[in-house]
Amino acid sequence: MRFNKWLSALTAGVVLSTSLSFASLANAEENRTIADESIYDILVDRFFNGTGKNDDHTVNAQDPTMFAGGDFDGVLKKIDYVTNMGYTMLSVGSVFATEKYDGSMPTSYTLLDPRFGTADEFKKMVSSYQKREMKIMADFPITDVSPNHELAEKQGFVASTNDGKIQWDLTNEEVQNEIIDSAVQFVDTYGLDGVRLTNIEQVDTAFLNRMIEQLKATGAYVIANAESDADFDAKFYNDVASKFTNSFKNVDLDTSVLEPYIEETLSDTPVLTMTDTIWSDRFTLAATAEGMYPPTRSKISIASTLLLPGVPVVQYGSEIAMNGTAGEEAHQYYNFKTDSELADYVGKLQSLRNDSDTLRNGEFKWLENEDGYIVFERKSDTETWIVVINNSSKTKRVHIPVAELGEGKEIRGMFNSEIIRENKDNNYTIILDREMVEVYQVIDARGINTSYIVALGLVVVLYTAFMIVIMKRGKQRRANSAK
Image 1 (tube, rainbow, N blue to C red):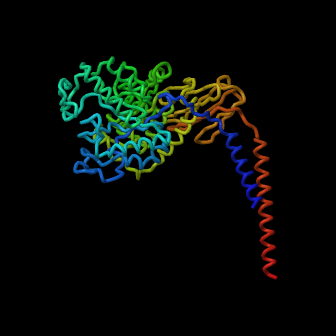
Image 2: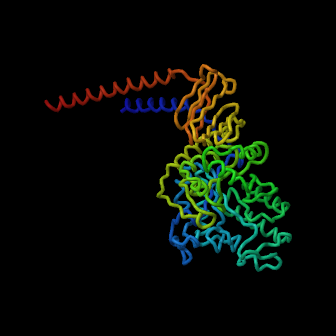
Image 3: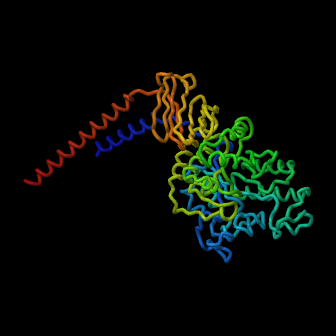
């Protein structure tokens, strides 16, 4: 038994030392900013029905205009699926009491929709995800709410009615204070890590800044779903989704249109990057209109938003190539029976992004960016990465001069295990097939790992000796029993 324990300990030590010898990913920094996050955007009602106890007569999963039954318990029951994809923040939309499944007709700033679950169930869901190191963000509609909203009866609160919704009189300081207090209380009550302010198009910037300041004081990130000059943690641009869609819906498309958003992220406030939103047509719709294979398109588009500088926002169902036009058709009930290959790929990609501050925030340099072929470098004092996105119709190669990366280096592919070394032309040449994405880490060239080979050989010798001892003991026992 002592021999077994000693052999096990030695083997574990060799495995651990080997793992450490090959581990060069930097640890994530404790002081994260929104530039370190990646957001997975869902609608609670359309995700998963965890319990039928909160379903009422308005729940009918067969009618896309009605509530489908998704709830907080369902989101909690799918925690492994969500967290395994590696997103660092889950955006759950508006969860207030509402007359429409997507939360766009809220009737309260205090009560949660009973079809989604109870306050305690929401708290449990939030805390459970946070224990898995995933933040929770929710929407807060500033105006354009249901005429049946609980504040609508207050004198002087309603300024107008349009398209069946009411608009608050946001020039009224009492209204402003009520909305700010409600949002802060909402974040504090449920321990939220972020809030997305919606319906802000006609809202005064000074008021927004006052609201943002008080929300940030709680420690929460604050973003929006419309353009604004207010002090949000990340910038939203109306045309970002269309620019990303038009760059990746097919091959050989112009990707230089993405550069302004990348440059702003690097020089100023990070930009929210995405190929579609909860309020838009699905990216898959554009890809299928081009006659392209949706899973491949989704893989490349998601990888691009995750790897290029910015704050990636990915809509639920993108990993199963969900389709549809804006509204109910795009808000399909999630089909968890669909192949999860792309979800697994996203998880592997995110593990690299989450573990490396350099891959998220390192010094950025374009090496190529033309007609769907994107190559860039991210570098720090401790790490260098090369990312290649070949969204073209041909196998492509890039020659990176030794002067760029240094002599005596190896470029190692994280997905295909390829090792690239300096060639006779003093270049590191990377070749990647069409419609593929690869992340390469630049490390010092290694010869034979002598210590590893010796240790591994020692384990083999000891194991062989152990087996010989066992066989001899067995032979001796059989001989003794035969007497």
